View (tube, rainbow, N blue to C red):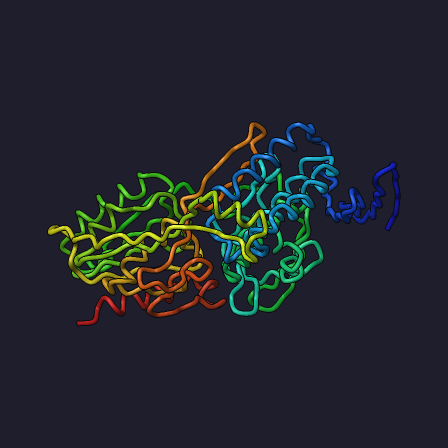
Length: 444
C-alpha cells in the first residue's frame, strides 16, 4: 500500500492506494470525507457549475416532493445539516464517479425504493455477465452469460471478497427500504463499482471451486432479453398461463389483454409477474380480471402549509410540522365481461412498483391466490429529473398503504402461499412456484 498527501490552506487530503482502487480521506471545511475511488473511471472531471446545479436541484426538490420522512434515516429538520455535509464532500470530489457515489449515498439515506440518484450510461459500465441473488444462506446465480457458470452455482468471491462482505460496504448506496429487496440489488451495484476485469470464484453442484477472470467488455447482458408478454395453454381449454415481464410500455399490458381474450373460456388462469419491476399501472388488465368491487391504496402526499413551516423555522414548537393529505378512493365496480375463472398470481421480491399495483387489489379482495414471495415494497409516482450530462434522480411523491391501512412501503405484499426455489430447483430448471399454481388450478 502506498500513501501520498497533498495540502492546501483549507484542506488536507490523504490517498491510500490499493490495487485498482484508491481510498481518499479528506478534511475540508470542518468535515471529514471518505471517498472510495475507482482508478479506471477517474478521467472525467466535472465542471464546478455542473456540480452546483445538480446539488441545488436535488436540494430544492426533496422538501417539495418527498413523501416518506417517517422512513428516512434522518429527520426532515436535519436536511440542511445533511446537505451542508454533502456540499463540502461534492465540492472536493474532482471526478464524475466520486460525485455520483456521494449523491447515491446521500439519496439512499431517504430509504425509499422510488427515490434515488442514478449515474449516466457511461458510468454504469459493462455488464458483469451474471446475476446472483440471496437464496437462504447463499448467493446463487440466477442468470448467466459466462461459459461454465450456470443457474444454481454459488458465488463465493468477487474480486477476492464474499458477496456478504461487498454488501456490508455497498448497501449504503442502494436506495431501497426493504432489507430483503435491497440485498437483491447488490449485483446491480457491483456492475457500477467493479473494474472492467474482475475475478470470480464459483462453487458448482459437486462442490468444486471454479476460479474465473472475467473481461466485462467482451460480455453481453446476463439474461438480457427483449421478450414481451407471452402466453400458452398448459392444459388445452382448461388452464392458461400468461407471463408479463414488465409494464415498461403499454405493449406489455396490450398483449396480456389480447391473450386474455383468447383464454376467456379457461377454467383457471395463471398470471406470472415475477421479476416484473413495473412501469405504468395496468388498470385495464386489473379491470378485465376483477369479478368483484375493488379499491385502491390509501395514499399520502405532502401538503405544503407556509405557517407550519414558519413555526418550525422560528422554533416555536419542538417538532417540525410536516403536513400531508391522506386520500382514499371509492370502490370500483367490476366489468360485466370480466374473467370469472380461478385466478392465481405468481410474485417475488422482483415484483415491484406498477407490478405491485397490479397484485394489490387481488390480494385485498381475495380474488386471486398469490404464490411465491412477498413483493418489492415500493410504489410512488416519482418526480423525475435528468441532467444534461445524463445523470438523473427521482423522488417519490406519495406514500402508499394497503386499503385496510396496514403498511406497504418497505414491506411489500405477502403471498398467500410462500415458496422459494431451492438450489437444486435452479440446477434442474424446475419451477416449484408454477407447480404449486397448477396444483391449485386443478382443485375443485
